[in-house]
Structure formats: C-alpha cells, structure tokens
Length: 260
Image 1 (cartoon, rainbow, N blue to C red):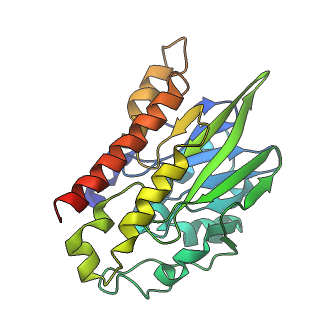
Image 2 (tube, rainbow, N blue to C red; image 1 turned 45 degrees about the vertical axis):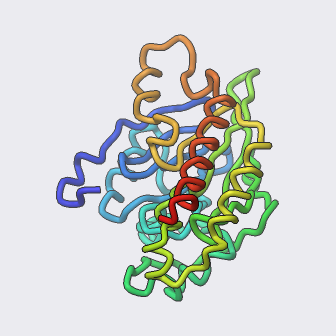
C-alpha cells in the first residue's frame, strides 16, 4: 500500500449479500456484518486508512458507534493496524486467535514491529462468535501465522441463506526460507499450512470472501454487482473456493520442492 497516496485505497463500499458488506480498501479485505444487535467488523486495515473505513461505514447507512465486535484473522499490521483507534471510538470487543499472542506481544518479527492491541477474547479452534442473528465459526488454520483463524457463517436475505467462508491467512511469504530464517520460525509451519488447506477443502462455501481482494477478485465482483442480475460472489463459489485452495497448495508445494 502506498501510504503517501492513501486516497488511491478507496473503494466504494457495497452490500455483498443480505447483511454482509464490503467496507475495505485495496490493500486488504474488510467486511461488515449487520447482526441486528450491532455490527461485526472482520479485519481492520492500516491506521492510515481509518478515515476511509469510517467513512465507508457511514456511507452504507451505519454508525461506527454500533460496532460491537472487531474480529481479526491474524496478527499482521495490514489486518489490525487501526484496531486501537476503532476501539477508542466505539468500545468494541476484540477477538484474535490465541496462538498469535506471541506475535502481538512482539516476541516474533523483532525487527518488523507489530502494532499491538489488547485482545478481549482469545479464540480457539471451533469457537463460535455470536451476536444477534450471526454465529461465526472459527477454524484454526495455522501456517501464515501460528494463530490464523478462518471464518464461516450464514448470511441471509429474505428467504435465501448462503454459507460464507474466508481463509484467514493465505500468504506464503512468511513460509519462504529467507523470511523463516530471518525470524527464526520453524519450518514445520509449512506443513501446518498444507494441513490447514486440506482441512478447509472440506468446508461448504457458498459465498467466498477474500482476506485480500485478489483472493476472490473482490473489486471486479463489486463492479459486476452494479449491473449483474446474478450475484458474482455466489455464482460457482464452491468451485472457486476449491480452486483457490488448490492454487495455494501448489504454491507452498513449489516453495518446498524448490527449497525456496
């Protein structure tokens, strides 16, 4: 993200389906769920983009003060850099995977500062985050970070309900030899990543959400929503989800085979 041209990060916020909305920026996917009893935000973005995120919430007709939960997929700055500011504004409760606490505390990536926050809830595999009409099932998917969490929940519009799914940490950048040796990370993280992918292949996903926009072509689909009679986030979603997981499996296997 070019922080000197932060305005280039703006994407018009939009309803994806039912009570699920996109409020993010080009650098990272940020999603909002209207539970009827308050708002849930999944990931939070960079602090430099805070004003964009807050404006997007207003633009959709919601109030930032109605944010009750901020759920973080993993402890990297692009997903949580402005959590502190959002909590100060809203008093929202924060959630993150318990195994990312060492990363939050600065015990890893020593020369790569993490902008920490104090989590209210430490998530374990299988935990349910419940608010209003929404129940988010949290699935531990370590690899990208130790505490990466993936999320699955239903979204409803009138009589139609679809199962949304998000892989919480898809990057293989933290699994390359140079990065792992620099930060003294165990190479077993690669196998954990592979096992996480295999586990996610078993999930039913009728609405594929991107942790980053390129994962599911978020920006292109948002534009298609303006004119399409069919929802591009839902059409062929299970196949798209499986194909994306296959691509990530191929990517990590190539890294291992080439000793990268």
